[in-house]
Image (tube, rainbow over all chains, first blue to last red; front, top):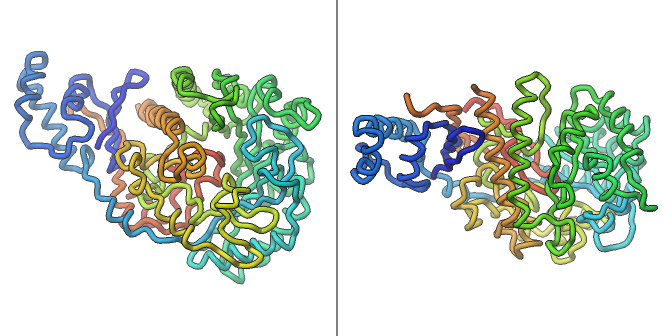
Length: 455
Length: 51
């Protein structure tokens, strides 16, 4: 299978099963179109029907020469390479648990209008996680991670900094067990920044491998969607705190992360605004929400969104060439040493190697399933753990998802977000169509950027 | 080649054989928390790097 597309003046061809990327001239682009994206057998000689269609314009010898190049790449397993992956997908077994999203606070000091977590409470009551539950979560993660060295724990909410003392004690507890159990904890935090004072910033900078700082971009965009409890915008409070934080962060990972909605389809301006504020690790993502909500992105918004992604991609190339580059999370792609095919087949790890734990210690497949009783997997306090559900998620590979199996983007998005699949399509194995379309566009831009920067 | 320029020769198939060590970051923990782009994750298995 190949995927060929035109973007920014390039004819780009992705060989899906090998991951090879080529740029081709117009005649070969046309030739590949005649062969088709899913051509399963490449003959040594140019098929007569194709020769007949192209020889008039390009000449027989030239067409044969073009075809020979296609054959050579096919034989090198870099074009129309075979799909040998189903055998690996069939053997997928449940993995050790290695990543946990710890909901230390089901309470929030902002009232973001698109919040998937229902203003932080996930359909329940306001709750703060006790240290007892947090320690039990650490113990559970260590116990269930046999065979894994690197463990991840993300402090999440609601707003996690509303429970800072438990975060500090949990980190201390985790660190105290690393040597004994041969583990390395990689702590991360996702915060709205409202409580990010100097002391907290120093702690997070010291202990967190990555910190995600929420900001939607321009002041008016951010404040329209991210007001505080009193209805006042959060921009003026959080931006100086983020700037201080990033200044002392050094080279360590962070992301300033925003959400764009129907209200700011010109979101490249928000990305640029973030860079002007001094942030060079940026993620701005489309809202995923009930289509009935007024700010939701719908099918008819996609042409405008795609136009904006194209604009942003060109801007990133210009900035990179001028030595003023920044990272836009969804355009980051590693064509050479990215994740292995096994990882790409299963993606996010939700419900399998990744789980979320709520303030009561209840376990869910991921943070987006929290609060839905039918998706409760167990409890870190009782030790109960639904291994059947875990196995179900372990087998949610791109080869188990019918729409993904035949999709060119399957090794880049890895089947999408299982929680969104369930919420909007009714099945973890049925990919959320709108998200797929957005992801494919982002991937096309990401590959194009690589092509442009390789010249 | 006169008509095709190869930008990248990655062969994913080789990484399937030695892959799956599970030490790399869970993608949802990276930045997004809502949507997946797995291909930007770093491989942490030295036996796969460079394949």
